[in-house]
Length: 150
Image (tube, rainbow, N blue to C red; front, side):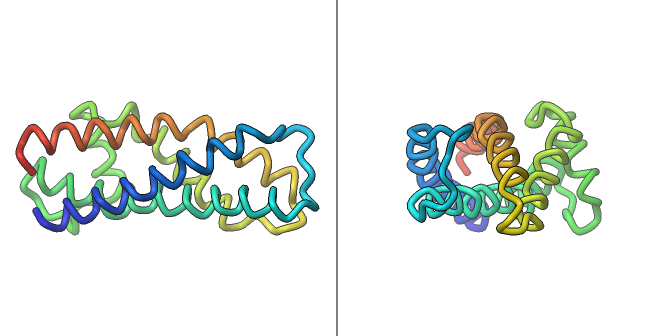
């Protein structure tokens, strides 16, 4: 279970950094933001980077390891949707569809070009809305693992 502890540590670091970045973003008016100001660009890009890292760490590392812990089955024998459906069945996820929506948002960030400022801002607003859900999902899993002394 050392692997899960390392994953939890990584996620905690992403969350701590995101909390800082979100505070900075909340000081900005995203409707009127000056995207020629390098300070604003740095804050938004840092948030995007960390959001991608958080979503990846949870979806690609924690969920498969947690699936193995819950079911006793190797995650390599399950598709990602099977893993999500299992987490939904055990009430760790609201729905597999919701997580897939967040996964698509992460992928959207990767494919937004620098000049697509409107798309970038809309994706950031959506990520800010989904952040609490991601954090709550993670907290449910972490509490469960702590109760199991992992």
